[in-house]
Image 1: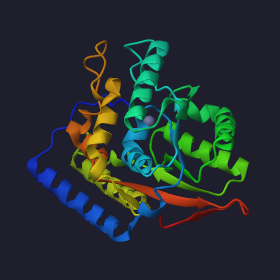
Image 2: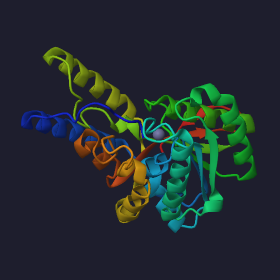
Image 3: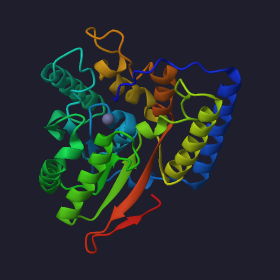
Image 4: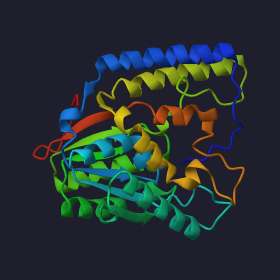
Length: 296
Ligand SMILES: [Zn+2]
């Protein structure tokens, strides 16, 4: 999780209605373009998570459905997420706690501990460790082959998420693997109109922020064509997310820190626990080493 230190924004009833209408319109247009990913769910996959909790938030429902079909799923955490509460615990203590949470969450997703890997790179500084990340990922991917790689969307705002996308695609490039890269979204949802606007700014600035976010949301959302219905596994996904106690409920050592449940007054987690998960799907061709956008 990326902590948000802003106050919970207040929202007028008229603003809430406008937001709901526009987000429904965006999702309606997206649904017209999407294609079911169901026929590919039985394939083995790697899940690349920059931090513990991204695996559940971005594709937890898809993992559960894949496991029900008997697909092998392996999860690699690039960092331990030790930067989420820097004033409450030492990095080492938090890393230990979050690794434990990650293992419990993966078990809840029906991914056994021997299929969970930790690279232990530095939270918040992945972009400075790309070479180490690529080397480690190449080694893992070569040892345990798979046809699908779930990775944060290239437009995700946190730099660690962008770095995770760069490192994974570079590792596949290095291995010359034929694969499907499925970009999942976590923080892409943290935009108006999907969540309420943060505090601050005059009328003109707030209008400009809304227009900018709408334009950004369209360019992101309309590229996410692969779609998985996760309504049948919603409770199990919820249970898995609850294992990330430090992110969902906070730490006793930091009672006032924001949590995933309270972020944007609950708008954010409501989006992430919705009835479907969407992915931007790209096929990486081994022979030509080029990327081709696919429709799922
Ligand atoms: Zn993350």
